[in-house]
Length: 495
Image (cartoon, rainbow, N blue to C red; front, side, top):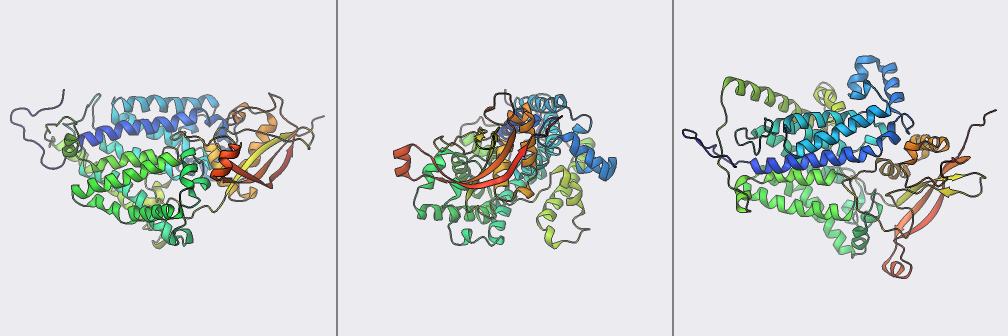
């Protein structure tokens, strides 16, 4: 049953976004689900009791150096109550449950609030494994959706509680900033690849976790890649401004940017990032367009206008106004005095007022770190990864929105030195100990439960093969060993 007007009621005048909101919130539930689902299989290995960077050590250090109150502000997480493996699993499983309930449109406001708090509890404790812009995007979308979602146990489309203009604007504002700020940093970085239109020539092989369609796109001629550079900059710096223009411009903008996002999703694995940006774009579509596309046409109901509603709306608008200012301040941080940065600084640990900037500098080459174990120092056996390139004949997979944070971080680590990523050595130590949670981050245990005497990491450079090599050998990758990334780490001898 869809809502209809009662006698004496007058319809709400202006554009309505009930269908866009309904679809967006269902999709947001699925994005949250994907984020928690990937943590189910990783969180113990990353920050568990026998993980690479145990949360208990991190939170204890914060409490020691910052004190109880400042440490709670710096790391706002429920894991202050307990950092046991059981507590970690309770948080992510609870996240899965509320994500499903949100997708089913059960108490959407409450489920969004709980999911956002649970996800914040995870990323505030994941340390090096949560330094991604996608985490901030999801946190900001979850926070803003608290004011965007309808009230009630099973609100349906929420026709009696339509979204406020300010909450709709703020979600669109996040969508706009993700694009526009990414375009600005591309030019501001001074990276010549964007200026000479070569940024996409090796993009498909050099990104964090390539996919097999990217192999084929990589071999298209330079003019195609140059065209995608122009399209990317045009979308990010020009076309997205249509979000502030009348509806026909917004609809055209949606069509262009959605095509771009689908292209990105189909040729690379960026976890839930592009899926979230994709569904945020749905908020450009009003109910009039949805009716044209075949969705049932809705009868709008008027807003309540009592004192309680007015007070609630004023409070919500005040909170959103602070968030709006903080997002502007975060983007302009380099030119603002500390006092004007205060709201952004206070909100920074919550990750709900972020500055974005994707692919400011393109990676010129692809390097991969490999963990290897040995019992004699001569024969080294690799630990096989689940997702990132390793076997040159294994086809790159498609698994986004799943996010393998361990392997993702290894890509970042390969771009610097071992001294910049001490967690790699911590991973070596855990492998020497035979840590089951850390071993579960790999495809298998090559030593079958008997940890090796020593573990090292090596660095190799990878390229996509050309078409002729692929046809002749079946190899998707060409690999060249560079040398050791970290030296062998040996077991402590006991008497």
